[in-house]
Image (tube, rainbow, N blue to C red; front, top):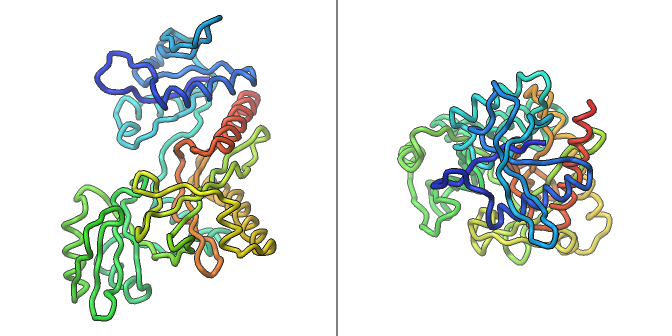
Length: 363
């Protein structure tokens, strides 16, 4: 089992360290309990013209703390693309390797690439099973902005390729007066106000990266806990039978008066069961209804995306907004989820991952 990652800059051949090292050690240990030998490598270490792959693995030495060791390994049966950043995956040598791996007759590529928000939205809204759980969204242009502002009091404008809430802009009708206003979702900067939609659009364009594409999404009326907005981060993945299962659910709570819940932007974690108990006022019927919605989303969305995008997926995280009326809406879907900080979810994820790798090896 080979895991494709990217090196830290400034070192000839950097070995894992810090949190990265701890997570990869955990992956290695759980894989070994299932009889899987796991090593890690960088794109430059995999040469299609040779049978060996330059990489590194974690070695437990008797009577000593384990250590990372660089070596040459046999070509793996499965390659897990665990590159964490889009810019790294977009590098020429990485793209060339991924194409070669997908074409290779005896190697199975797991987690082929990042997804883009617009392709995900189009896939979900075109399918009757997921249409109702998908907020209305359109590509950003003046016509779509004007139409959406006529329908909804609040909008979110997002780069189609962002992560952890970067680059999100909130647009809303100005309160108590005619016009519109907007601000960065992650900034403490105040609102910029405009009387005309055209002036709003012109200013937004100046604040946006000229080389990126954006979409406009209906602003969800999110439920709150202690006066703060929250959403649900759901992980779903394939198990040892190749079936999609719900791995776990985490709650991310926005900082006071903030809109984005991502921890790097000031959000905090909360216990799912406690939050559901509070939001549902202790009603077991309402809690069951919400959990049923989550299971339905976790099992339905991946199958729809695999069909519509014509690609084999294996793991997804889904950001879900719980609206004040009790309906769940899909905020976004990520094919390269970061590791959960909740230990029980992370361990279950690694167990399912190893079981699925065994399933792949026999299929």
